Image (tube, rainbow, N blue to C red):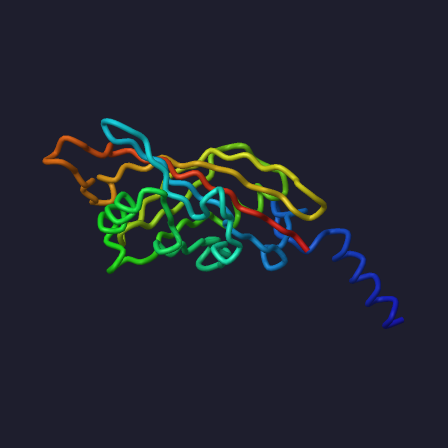
Length: 197
């Protein structure tokens, strides 16, 4: 009789579902490995365009991949500024100086965990709310994205977000007595590899 009662209770819980309402069929983030595998920061001056890379396209380095960590409802990627590279070393030096890399050696991008689970499960198409921290200042921004399966259990999330340097209290450097000026707006493109167990 006691065994029958236990089975009835188990079946009721199983049929009713033990996940909170609105959270069914979502992959558990604990079983998800997310890595930022590519990031490009694109900006323009009044005379040309430039790119800074997490991984230069000609030499992708898995050692530079940044794993996501879950903290306070966010899946956060902490990108060391030292990981960023550029073919123009003078420009790279200016960027590190502008973001005050000595005092703030990390750029942080956070995605709400609930939204991330929704994206991975194939639900939702609205822009992703991001929390971007640059030079010690955090702003809430929105990113457009697309997600594509590349193999069983693996997807690639691609997105971009536009930031204004002035919103992060950064003053773009000027070269040659102010003749070359960096535009206030830069675009961050990112690619996240998502593996689910």
